Length: 87
Image (cartoon, rainbow, N blue to C red):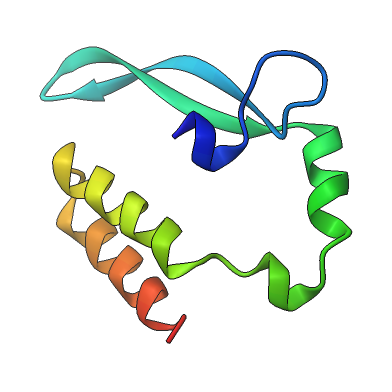
């Protein structure tokens, strides 16, 4: 995901990768999340609205991760609906 998200070390990164704790099955589990940087947001806003759209390829990674980590079916369904809007 680092490559897909444009996360890298240093001040030129689009995203910061953070460790967080989430609760699953009444247990705390370490997870990773991405938080956009100010510079990344500025870069993003330079693109046309069409170029800002999320690609089908990107959604395939999101769906695969949601299924792999057994996220709630309601969230998987939500992602599937969003991906369908891309077509």
